[in-house]
Structure formats: structure tokens, C-alpha cells
Length: 107
Image (spheres, rainbow, N blue to C red):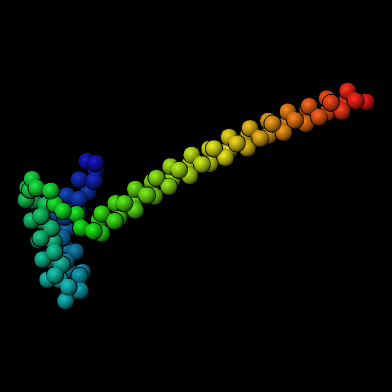
């Protein structure tokens, strides 16, 4: 977590940003600097009220949650199939052994 904070602080350094702004196309330079100023103001102001998440962030959060649940269910399903296969192999070996024993008694 601290490495991420350090990276963000370094990435939004004023000197570095001023260097990057020169590489932005001419028409977008003003919009880019306005965007960065708004983001800086947003990060520097302390708000105690909850910000309402928009629909896109809510939907993305639910999508990630569904992906994690699907991953967990697929792991459990794979383990159950492996266990079932192992049990069936034991049952087949046991039934073959009984058949051989019963055929040997008949002879």
C-alpha cells in the first residue's frame, strides 16, 4: 500500500507533470492541465461525506465480484470432480476384485 502511495506521489510531481504536459497535443493541453488541477484539488480536500458511486463503478464492482465467485465455484467443482473420479476408480477396482473372486470360486 505504501509503495502505491509513493508511486502516486512521484507520478504527480509538479516538475514531472510540467514535462509530460509538453508532450500532450496542442488542443488538449489546456483540458489536460484543467483535469490535473481538478484532480489535485479533489485529492487535497478532505470530505467526510460519502461520494455516491456512479452506475459504471457499481457495475464494475459487481462484475469483479461475480468473477471472483465464479473462480471459487470452479475450484470447488474441480476438486469435487477429482474426488469423484478417485472414488469411482476405487469402486471399479473393488468390483473387479469381487468378480474375479466369484469367478474363481465357480471354477
